Image 1 (tube, rainbow, N blue to C red):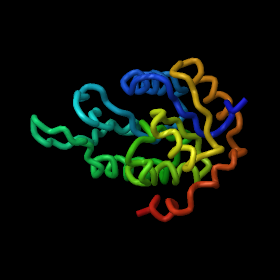
Image 2: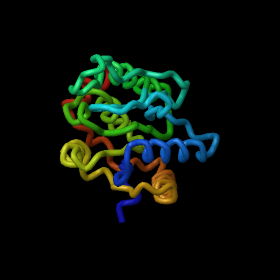
Image 3: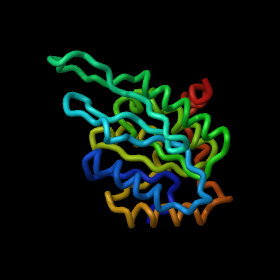
Length: 191
């Protein structure tokens, strides 16, 4: 079973459900677990093309707006990659300071293009840190090119996420081969 793979990827539910599961998981972690990462904050979530809430830092609560205002009649994607890149910088700083777990809201369109949170993924992989994230099925192939065979798909179920974490946590001190981070991203991970 792949439960002990160092990257847990939640798939199979809508973004708000997945982000809430991640939030619940973080709240239930032992107090000594140091977490670096960001999740989508539903308080400002919006409908529309490419809608998403702000990203919120799990270490200090800062919010990173990731949507741009294109006007009320906009039909284009409103995702503002610059906001995601700022959030990524904060995660990279958290990885540099030291953490036990990296949580990244999702591997999505801009990560598939090797931007957004991709450098944080690569940095965490290079450091041998466990990563919890999510992915939409439409970006599954891109995730596979980026992180296979280091990840396991998890159902949108808190017990499954906690089982994955216990398995990975038991392996602390024996990194599970994360040094396979895509080389093209290693240089981007520290900009």
